[in-house]
Image 1 (cartoon, rainbow, N blue to C red):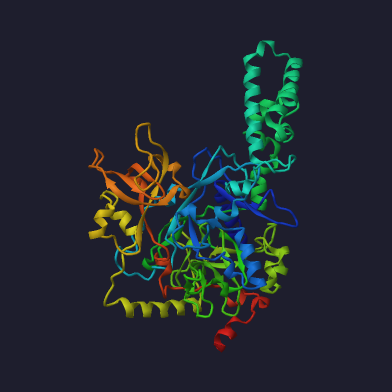
Image 2: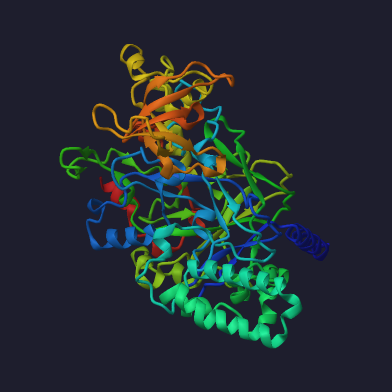
Length: 617
């Protein structure tokens, strides 16, 4: 009977993985000295397809500034974490603070690697910038989740080109990472080289097709040699050698380059893995989707995408190690000195604390970066899953024993600056498709939450009101006219809220004034006009100075003032944002506590005395 159960479980796992859309496995870029995990397509994706599930973005407020690098360990930790962080533009969070705020974006944001040659997925920034605010918390009402969960969600990745089954996903990390400047070594292939080589392959194929009747094999060889040796050298300059290395030496192989999707795929066939390889070396990571939690205080939750059998791994949890929990403390900011006052006690902790796993006897916390796992909520009564250490087994990316035997401070030394700690979420009973996943966060977390809720009720039971926030006004003003600066003087917006505009502009036509009386440039609004064109880098402070009559679509156009004066800005291009340090994230006394790792599985060498230190205080 036991053998029958095991065979049934194995059959269910194989069937579930046969339709898996996304895999986690060792990256094609992984080496023995620098191991890397990567994401791989489980199906064919077309350009524009959404890949995986939307994720959260978790801001770290004023975190990467020099003032936080107060000792060697802090410097090592921050420099390690910086390699996994994104700028706030990607989620429109640039107004969270005036200094070095960055974001953690789990899932694709950390596990989709960078390749200098190409990228095949990119953020659809409009999905988060134009997101519809959640129903909970209710506008103007206090709620336990305020300040305890990130308001930035729905960060979506889409395919930028066709992606075949088994292809590793590479994300667009931005121009700073590309290094496509003129000082790049000539022999180093960069993204622009592949793009130019693809253009050349297309041009050669078109030319040979146009003169197909006259194109003998010898003529084709002569044309290819002349183009790559003479014309390419003149046209491409110092990049000619690199581009030529991407062009097949035989004309007959040019079509093969085109058929596999271009010179990048042709040169790097090892980036595509077979289904058999993925099944052996990887694990399926599309068992979870996001949605509003069934627990009112929890915000969003994690739900199964398919039936999960008891004992099945629902999701892997690769972890990023943060060996010093006190580095997540936030101190009062001295705005005159433009740095925190470390002589004062901490005023709170970074929001990321609520998404990390830890233990009361350890200074180290672990940030999970597996897709969707940060959405798994706590319920002692409804728990249907638990966390455990990933065993290596036949997966080459499981935990290695020596990581669990080391002191936390050693885990950010140069030899260990990679994701080497992996836990798993395992089903403790059968879980139906569409059912919410819960784990037990532990006794310490529960006690901290109960204490927080008691204080919350004491403060807000008689007066449940809460200041309106930017998300509230974005709902209210979706079809309501924005106020002009003159109107605001007598009827201001709620405190701590301001307007921001998405702007692409062009010079005004001849005959129109190009500057205001005060010398500010005047331009015309031309975009963004499509959701795909919205990005945080096009989002600027602005104030409405004029409003048109109501248009046929029921909305309005505006003249706005910021660094420039822009005319004909449509209603949809204006959003409310919370001013610096005014969003719910900065709420004094908001709940903060790491999720508990069970005592019986927590490594002894990691117990570096935090509980004793806390008791001594």
